[in-house]
Image (cartoon, rainbow, N blue to C red; front, side, top):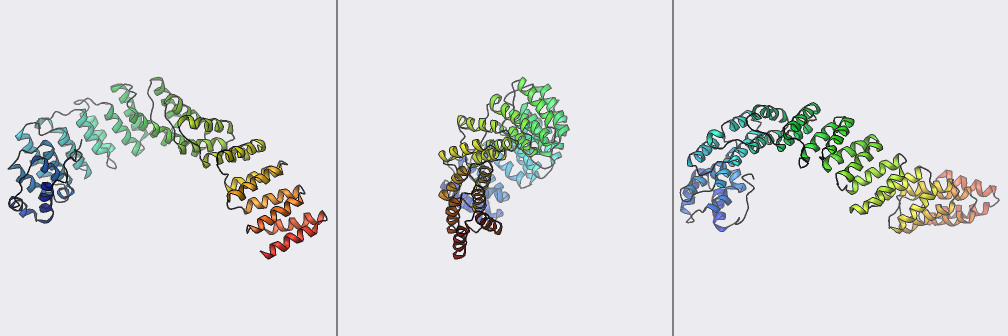
Length: 461
């Protein structure tokens, strides 16, 4: 727990508010006199509330004077001391920060802890003073705080949070790993840093050392996530897949982060075979539940390469995992059926969509009408048009053009007249090519008078 993460119980007490009012308006040189004359004495709890406030972090000199004033009256807690160290460090007042650490060491009573030094590591690294952070680690034991894995991890984490911090963190790890035994978290921190920097070779080296030192640990999921993600992002998917198989053999698997990243990359590559393989490991072996966007992305990929059978399998699987298909899901499958020229399946799926209150997209409506017309099923094409009108699916111009073209091909003149007039009343304008096809087809069938009626209606609009 960092110095600023302690419970806020009692925060905002009148006593603390009175002190904060003084710190916020009185010059630092006058703070102690103002506090003494305010008639309110400090308590240990009020001191903590004051020191963790934004006012103290923005006015570190006033915070020091408040601390000094309060310490004369009450015994301040280790948390209050750690807050002072944190305030000074974040203000880059490193000499006063070390003075505070020395005072804590001299007072004894367990005031100094790993948390104190973790705050110092973070302050130094925030200003990219990596060497000074390492020097602070070096003197921990001199101040009565034996460095352990938690301290080492705090140092490495502080370094790795900064851009370019992976290399100094790696150097610190090499320096201290013989003195402090690293744990699983140590390697996870380094692997996440290599992932951030995209350094595949260093990630492989670190991962290998992790297995030698701490072995396989199913709870070390962040490390596996970071390592495999680094390989995938570095274009080494086959190697990542091989490592994934080894992990599975040892009862260890990454988390959703890796699977989501890997599937996203495979989708962009159009590699549905490996996407499905990864998906099956994620769901069956890792027991992870994909979210709706992940389902939609893989379903769309399967449909784009003609594997609608697996897309339907996933659609059936979704409610079992508490995920429910939306219009994106349904339209991806419908588009796949249309592109594969499966008119009967597309017609049946449109009926299922209607039953589930899911609407086809405007582009799918156009494509479905075209498919049904080309596959000699004008009735199904008309049903799609009815759906467009009923649910006001827009834009409808392309669907209207396709429906009229199909009906003209089948010489369904009564339907042409009926639906073209409906379309005209909806404000749809036919392109010149469709108008010419109107005239040619009706003229050829010796029904030019019907065309004239439609033409007059178009002019009135």
